[in-house]
Structure formats: C-alpha cells, structure tokens
Length: 437
Image (cartoon, one colour):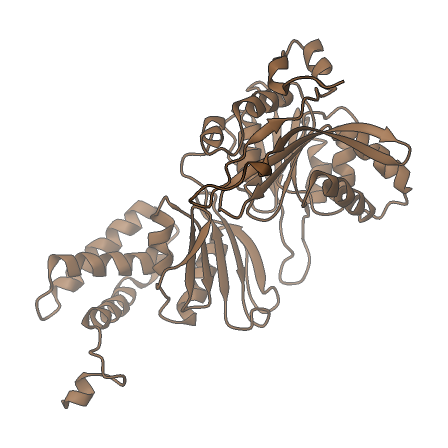
C-alpha cells in the first residue's frame, strides 16, 4: 500500500479505532440480531449481553489494543447500540441542561445557561434518524414524512423535540431538555437565587391555601421546574390530575393520575388534545388539576374549572410579562370557538386566576422569577394587577456579568392573604415590606 493510500484523502492517517469500532459494531448487530429488539429482555439483561459479546469480539481482533482503547470502544459501541450514540455522554453529564443536534455533524450543549459547541458528531444522518426513531418509539409516537415533527420524552422525563426533512432543510434536528435525576426542591431554587425565601413562603402558603396560580415565561425560563416545586406544596391527602403534551412532571404525592396527549395515527385519526383531557379530568373527582402548559382552547375549560370549585389549580403559559398573560388567555379563550364577549372572557379570567408568577432566563444564563403579581379584579373593562414582588434590575451587573439584583417586595399586601388566614394559613406580614398607603 502506498503512503498516499495509507494517509487518506486529506493527508491524515485514518482513525484505526474508528475502523475497529465500525467492524465490531457490524459484527455485533449480525450476531445478536433480533436479541437487540427482544421485548422480553430487561434493559440490564440486554446491556449485559451486549457487553459480553463486545468483549468476545474485541478478543478476536488482531493487533494490540490498550485497556483504554478497549474501554473506549466498548463505551462508544454500547452508547450507539443501547443508548443515544454521541449524545449519551451529555445525557450522563449532570452539568448539561440541554442538548441540541443541528444535523448529524453539529452538536451543541447548554451549561449554566450558556451554549457550547461540543465537537461531537453522528457517523451520518442515518445514525441520527435511528436515534430519533429509538426515542419516539419508546413512548409510542412516530415521526415520518406524514408527521415530520414530534414531542416525546426520555425514560428519565427529559423533554425531546425532533423535526426531520422536508421541514428541517439541513437534515434532522433533535433537541433534548434534561431534567435533574433528583428533582429540584424549593431550597434549590432559593440557593440558585431563582426566588427568595420570602417569595418561597408566599408561594407555599398560596398553594396550600388553594390559590389558582399561573407560571408564565419564555421558552427555557424554567417554568416546568417551578411548577414541579409548586406542586410539592400540595398536601398528600389530595387527588391530583396532571395533564401534559409530553409527561415530564414528577410529583411526589401518593395520589397522582398522569394524563398525556396523543397525536393522530397514520390515518390522521385518534388525536387526543389537552382540551379533551381537561374535560375528562373534571369527571375524575380531582382535588387539583395541574396542566403542564395552556396553549389553546383548553384555556376556557381551565378557567371554567377554576370558577366551579376546582380551585388550587396550577398551570404554565408562554408570555413575556404578567400583563401579556392576560392578553394571551383572552386570545386562547377565543380559540375555543365559543361566542363570548371580551368582557365576559375578562370577567372569567379575573375571577379564576389569582396569582401570576413570571419567570425569565436572563442574559447571564440564570433563571429568575422576575415578578409575582396578584390579579385584583376588574376596573371597568380592564383586569387590574398589582405587583407583590419585583426583580431589582437597577442593582446592576457584577464583574462576571451576573445580575446583582434580587426579588424585592413592593410593599403591597395581596388581597388573598385574608382568604388564607380564614383557612388557618398565616403569611408573615414582614415578607411584604413596609405597607404603602
């Protein structure tokens, strides 16, 4: 073999490890075959079988391999066959909060709210497609030309979105939003400066006192994490129904029924939307209804539930500010197709929603609650809000580019505190600061 042939097209020596890895992976698939898809095998048994066969195949390889090379080959092939290929190391990395595969040769991750290129890549578009199919197949979903995008989840609850050609012009794209193996508690959010101890006390009292709460914010602001924390305040003796597009809430209470939407089948039938599940939940004797995200006509059903005895419900909604929350709710209620006047809709909103928690991902990468606002009622045609806590952006930024501000009380005492006191739940007046006239 000539030197030019030994060096490849670009004058670089071929990766011997990649050659061995490809050869062994092909032989592994040939020898194990159907066993890789045997539903009777547990994950541990399949992992043990694959590892044992990999060791045997490596022993048959001619030429010396260091212990490190062997371990690396076993790890990479195991990740490709059993896991998510080149994404698997980032799935295991607790510091990575989001993984983005922009085609087969571009993988980014988010750490501490910042994006970083990893240099990792799939072997080709086929491997990325197999990885996507593996994820969506686990939860009974599909992705193909007739349904070219999908929301799904990993076994640990991490949220997955995949989109393929023809919608994704440059090849399949996969986004994974990870969730901590140990769900964050209120102490964690206080330590992260997402909220202050005073806000935590108010939110705990509000949930225990069955105040209807909306968590708002943009994409990636941490709404679901805050929703998980809020739901942890629900007493253990209540029946909770959760409704989500892709189930990711992890409630610790003993009496929880989890509902998940269903996309249409290949014939375009059988879809079950959030609105259908909200209606059904009302027949399931719920003490609380927790909706992962309100985004359409289900807003009307949710408002009616809150106004007809199902108080203490918690939802999230995409919005840029507490005032925008009210506008979005108004728009989504109109999407329900009912012929309601704007005033009637606003009266429904004002009587149903009591507390809005707005959250944002700031430029320094941190996720903070930036305002806690009470829905006071109606003044003429307008729904009135009052801010209980506001983030102090005037505090500036430190040398590392982090915001120095925190949530500050506005001095206003929420009206629903009287309702909480009637239920025997005391909120210290000191957390609201000096009461203004």
